[in-house]
Image (cartoon, rainbow, N blue to C red; front, side, top):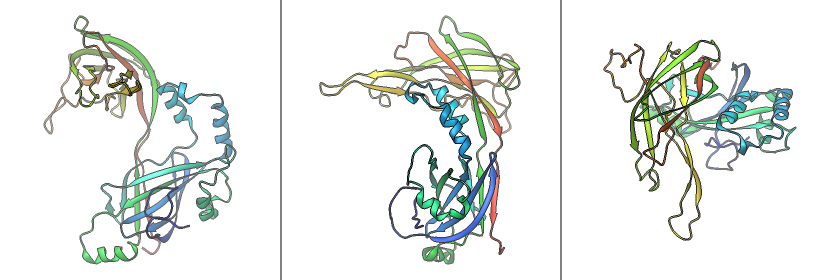
Length: 345
């Protein structure tokens, strides 16, 4: 298989092909076997594929469950629940280390799943042919291709070697992100200048402990018109406490989005449907409170850490601010570290 310096599984010939280095590295992640058969070395960096073996029966059962579902009619939470139930979970990498040095930035990936019982596609045919030894006992698998630049290297001798055929990979370390599960809560409430505080309760989906949230309205602000394409939008912030406090690896998510029809600005421009929202609408220790090193974040009247959240974006500054507690993210699998070492070492 000819591999080029790109994360794309579909892109055609582009530049020089890589120098193949056999790894035959396998590890288990999130309950599934992952295989990196080999890596391809270039002067700029490396390319490698992570193959995940998946049982055909699992994919068939999931496909049957999804029969008749119109994806466009699903809510955000419904779509997220289905994604969580999918038998395949990709390897989500937080860090990549090559030969003991961390790659700071610039790596990318793409992925695809081979499910011949759903559609006959030649998309991953080169992958199946190249790694037939690893895939001889399965017809269903997933492939993620990573394109990773080398870490910065000051030594001139090493830079020259890279220009020739790339560094030999003596060690390759992959560090994953934590795996989180989202549980919907779906509570709505309003805050205004006349009703500045609110108390709501919810039951934790796994511990069944009842938590009380104490909200207090902060301020309503107009979003910059330049970012909103000339439209006027407003959002309200609030602070809150959670009693008892959540685990440090758990966080709440609030919905701040708005869907609206953008008006035409001239005769020939049709109205268009749009959706906007606040990035970072999930809770955490509020970013507007700054503490020096060693100092604690501010606490509220109930003696626990203050958090911040945003209302749904509105086109009317005068109306009450609507808040939606979408759900809670709970870490169900810690971050993992996997390391390959060349046998001759």
